[in-house]
Image 1 (cartoon, rainbow, N blue to C red):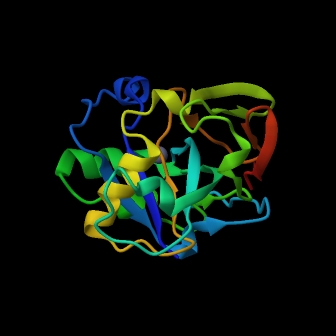
Image 2 (image 1 turned 135 degrees about the vertical axis):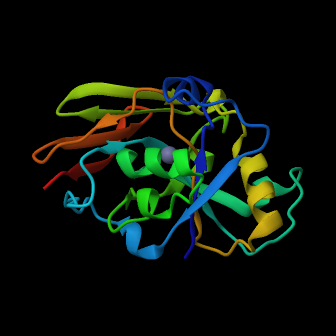
Length: 203
Ligand code: ZN
């Protein structure tokens, strides 16, 4: 299983971190050891003093493909979920300044809590799916898939130019504005269309 992330896919989030809007998706990966399933808690690591939550819609790849054309890309995914792209913002800021890769800031253990997946067909439109995250019962991020700079199909086609996609691979499709720091004792709760899909306690 491969996990892909997309940087700056929501203009308002790019702006809040002082980044430019990209011409093409900014792709990074997380290893399988980043996955947290079944609402498992996240253990705050000692190597960072500033871990941020980023709530994101996930799509799961349903069949193998490479060099997929954007026109047919929707044949390659049929399930959606929600995830948190935990980011060690302090390490990422240093990496960005030095022009270094983001791997340790994005791919560390437990950095990818995933919800269960549900059929995308459950939603009338791919381009109008609301999602949100609460931190200690306070609403922190609200997004809608229509705000994505690059939509699901574009991302699948683009990623498949470089990486053969396999059944079960997961794409984190980017975060809207409102990201913030977590602390030990926090409770994060993520929703798609009012349905609680994921909880994550910080320990
Ligand atoms: Zn992200």
